[in-house]
Image (cartoon, rainbow, N blue to C red):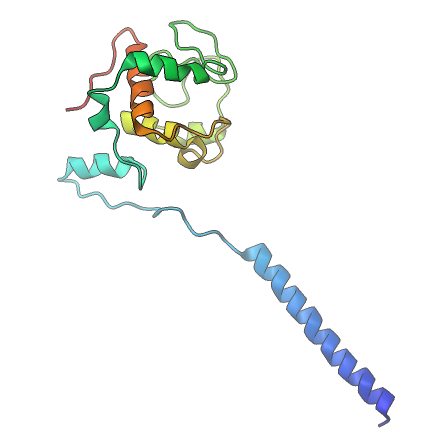
Amino acid sequence: MSGAEINKLILACLTVLLVMLLIGNVVNELSHSEPLERNAYVVIPSDEPAAAAAAEAEPGLESILPLLASADPDAGQKAAKRCAACHTFNDGGANKLGPNLWAIVGKEKGTVDGFSYSDAIEDKGGVWSYDDLNAFLADPKGFLKGTKMNFSGISDAEDRAAVIAYMRQQADSPQPLPE
């Protein structure tokens, strides 16, 4: 075997090795899955209703309920002006880029007449509880993956409580505050 043939054999082996490494990297990138942000299942003891309410709140986000009792709806109205570009809050108000938010607290998610919701909100189901509104206003895309809402959220919990207190008042019969 001559030196040229040995070089060809070594080059062929190195080429095969390089192709195998490249294919392995491509397959790894295509099949790599992101870790879950939180557990997919939550076990709630049936004899502990407080555990059920706590499980509804987003992990790492404190319940808004203690702040709601002292929240200022007038401050919430001022803070909600940034929402007015896409939403209306009055009875019979028009849908804009977002749905009219009249009587939204306690309302079934995705049910404002005449508004075309994303599949994400229709699939979420349930009613807009105080804790759900808190989580959604804190991080809309984090709470509801696939939402059409292009808003980064309200980081300050007192501001969120004020906005929720204002939204609560925008109804013929405001939802009672939890005790």
